[in-house]
Image (cartoon, rainbow, N blue to C red; front, side, top):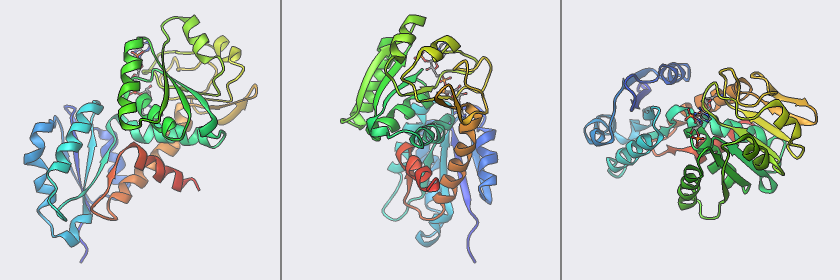
Length: 289
Ligand SMILES: NC(=O)c1ccc[n+]([C@@H]2O[C@H](COP(=O)([O-])OP(=O)(O)OC[C@H]3O[C@@H](n4cnc5c(N)ncnc54)[C@H](OP(=O)(O)O)[C@@H]3O)[C@@H](O)[C@H]2O)c1
């Protein structure tokens, strides 16, 4: 008899994400074991329980999901989990703190429906958050030139340096977008805009959007009014207005959910997968074919 699908949810926040829990159950997980306040140093006592309780032939029915709002902590937890593997005694793992990988993958794949990303000049506003950083990384991996914007140049530079360590060929331009004029200058000549700002923060005004004549695709990920790009509707899904294609947070949210559930299902097909931004993007690309 086949074993139940067990997902061990490791979340660094006080309460394990309810969103991630519900999505796991909807994706067909039989048993969800949720842990909150997880710290990287505790993994050596938590992960072996998932790895050494079933034989190698059954380990594809156990998997780990790493969430929480702190991506760095999530990455450290992942490293610690991998350190616990011993030969075939391992389980598949998905990393998606704050939905950063699934959301960025859905946003970049939406853009790829309209643009040849290898020839695209992209700008990611508020690129220092979990979602923005992953969007920059995925765009750069597709060969786009990416303007990496933050209210503080040093923060934009730090994101660029970190991504370049992982992807040395990335073409990244750090920018400071503190004033309205900075944002206007930063948008000039870009074909693709992804606004990855915090909830309820307008980053681009209606006038700035109108003035950005080179823009072909604009994607806003903020679903809490005021929205991130004034003029892009929350539910816009490849909506064409004034010669530009718009996606809003709900428009991107549909494919994000599909990718999230497909990634969870994929975890249970073998015990040797590590699903981070790139793997989740590739899975999303395969889904949209
Ligand atoms: N559609 C979906 O399915 C989906 C899924 C997940 C998340 N989201 C949304 O995606 C967006 C990005 O998520 P996240 O977790 O990466 O966001 P975040 O960490 O909350 O914020 C991202 C960036 O916004 C900038 N920011 C923060 N406060 C600001 C302010 N008062 N004024 C101007 N800029 C400010 C900061 O950049 P600087 O300090 O560098 O300027 C920050 O790093 C959020 O709106 C989130 O709700 C959507």
